[in-house]
Length: 220
Image 1 (spheres, rainbow, N blue to C red):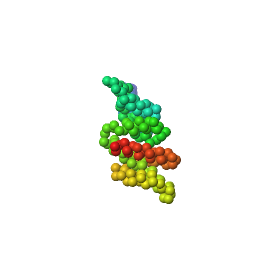
Image 2 (image 1 turned 180 degrees about the vertical axis):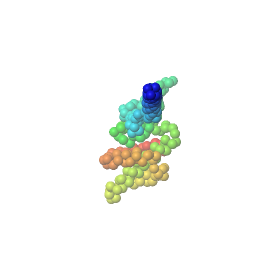
Image 3 (image 1 turned 30 degrees about the horizontal axis):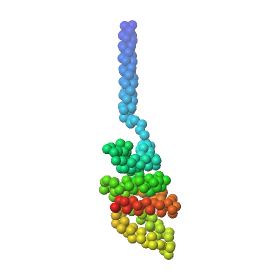
């Protein structure tokens, strides 16, 4: 009887040890599985990146030119054209696509492109290469010229129309055949229209005169 009890006790002890080992193994396996899951989660989770809007903002800021910088660019170009040396002032002036684009986009805004800078820009545009760029410039200038004439027709009394207006009307009809609309994105076009609406009559007229000069240069 004593032997049987002893045998049962030993058997229970072995079973308990086996269950303990099994439990430890399960716990270890669970810990390992959790560690793997965490590792996979870290790999799958994309790194924190800048939002598209902030990227766009930085990109836009990087292309913003200071009016004085743009004016200096044209002054250096002018000097390079007039210098008669072997290399001349070409070592000082180098073509910059971003600056050229900035000047073309803002050449109607007197607060960004002064009168003197605009005069130099007209000379610069005379030697401009690239039919696509010239076509866009002509298209945009024609759009602005038509816009002013339409505005003038709405606001000026027919009895006060002078000979200058009649002459310009005839010229504008020729301009309209150049193109129907400028290649601007809807957002840019909307922003530009809002800016134009805020201009007083005098500044609207200034823009119109600039547009006509640009047309004359490009079509020459």
